[in-house]
Amino acid sequence: MPMRKKRRYLTATMTDGYVKTIGPTTDSFTHYWRIVAELESGKTEVFWGHSRSLADARRKRAPAEEAARMRGWKSFTFEIAELVETLA
Image 1 (tube, one colour):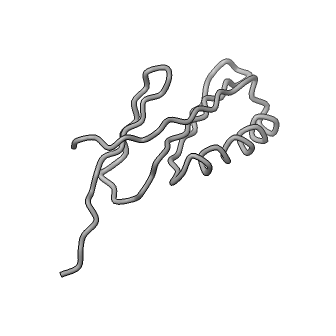
Image 2 (cartoon, rainbow, N blue to C red):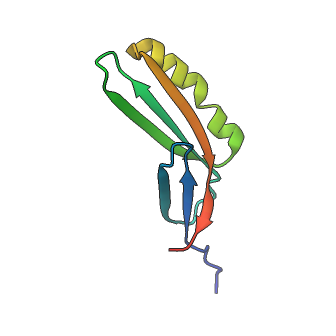
């Protein structure tokens, strides 16, 4: 009988206290990244994703800087948090 991968929930807690839970999943994600962009209008947009390594998550920063220039964001914050396995 083939072994089944364990389904689990992964949780990231950002510096501002925001908590993001992903799952159930069998993927090997290790980090969650988030971009909070401040638009010229004063509104904000949030972009996020998860990565299989810290290095992969860090690679999202350069495209965020390019997006800020192309879209005319006033500013943005880019954050990475480690994903931790949590109970369902």
